[in-house]
Image (cartoon, rainbow, N blue to C red; front, side):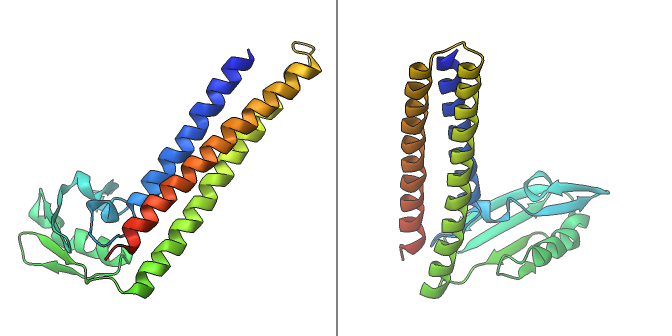
Length: 185
């Protein structure tokens, strides 16, 4: 019973780290990635659809993303969606595809992106701590229901704290790697 709680706690904390990595993919680093446009939705015949579902999105080089819609009539819709997304560039529509030219980042922009990443890290740590609280609550309920002893409860809560510390360290490692990537010129 207690081991199931440990496994569930680990699985939920791992989901928090995966969510952090997904969030990080939307941040710009020295080299542009298609992750920057992942959150952009396009009105596709009345349905809000992800940009990568209505055309091919490719990072052609370190500063350019090219978007080729599968239907030409979507060009103005995609262009408008990119402008509204406010990702820091204006789309260039040449009639066949849209190109996004990202200028090199300034050191101020890099610092600002690191601040955004720190905010994401705080959300991930809060998520990990919430999972810890859920695990501890389940352990306390087992103790209250007399399914485990007080000593077993204390040991289990200590184990959950060790798991929490391990995942907080993983969040910090993930941030350090992303920070280095952002600040690299």
